[in-house]
Image (cartoon, rainbow, N blue to C red; front, side, top):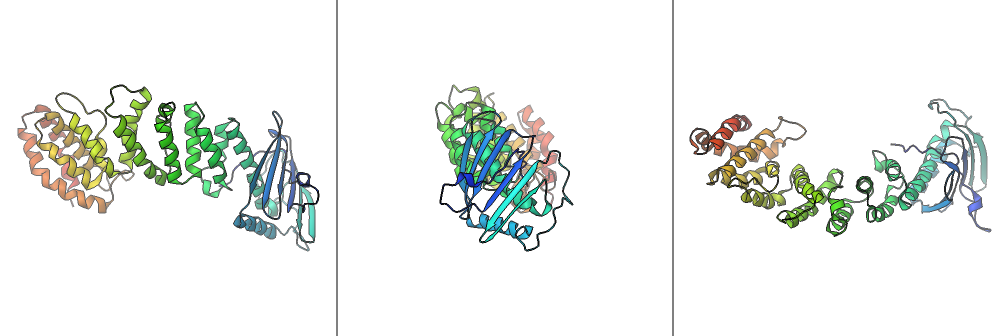
Length: 397
């Protein structure tokens, strides 16, 4: 996916280099009217050293440095070769196949390679589009880092990552500034956006470590607990032990902020979505604390998503003296039945997982049938009668 970056000028310029230094590999100028910048200047050396200098229409000039890896340099070189820009007979300038864009501005491209050198002025050139797009991504990277470091438009910075950061040039360059921003912003929405960006630019372990630090911070724990966004599956899995630690630490505390109370309800749902089985003892402890007219201290329905281990942990509650605990056990088992393969494709167990669950449900079916007719607690009788058919359907081979 390409990042869309609207610029008034992109200049890969020798003016950035000092006297006696070799000329840059590429020089490129893009000047147009519809842009937040008066000009931008960027230099790429033959060694892959990059410097971007941007002059906004408002605000101070700023610079950004990075470097291209060998594969990135090879990609740039390949784009240059494919364009035919330095060929003995360069292809004619043309825009066939390119969508019309108003105010294209004027490009000036100068490339030096060994003894070959060429400069071309154009509005848009199909053969050079991949190369020019790579250059725009470097400028977009500079703009994004500046927005983050100066507490600017964090949403704009994160949006430059697009829906597929793997296709964005050097997304990892945003990781360090994002981590620092996460540690200082006091705005919940901005924090959520920054965490979204961090998940796109860091490993699952790095992401989980930043979240864990925020949750344990006395001053910022409330903010972090209410701002963790949905993340890629691997990052969600890495978060599980962090979220469970938070739940075990705070679940029985008498006084909590509204943010932490929200987290005590939201975090179990995330653990359930991952089928995180180390959370079973915590959820069972919650279920144990229910009864005697008291509801569980928080959600326990996630036990239904913990596979056969979750079912085994819940079944003993069918024999408890407390009617409320028996009701909750039946409800959890009914949810497990509803997650049988094919019931709800987006949420169901796969057939291999459910093959372990089905015999456990089949084994308790006679007990449930008896409870539906003779349990001393009317609420239990009603609950079993209501849910029995779902469990019966789930155990059919």
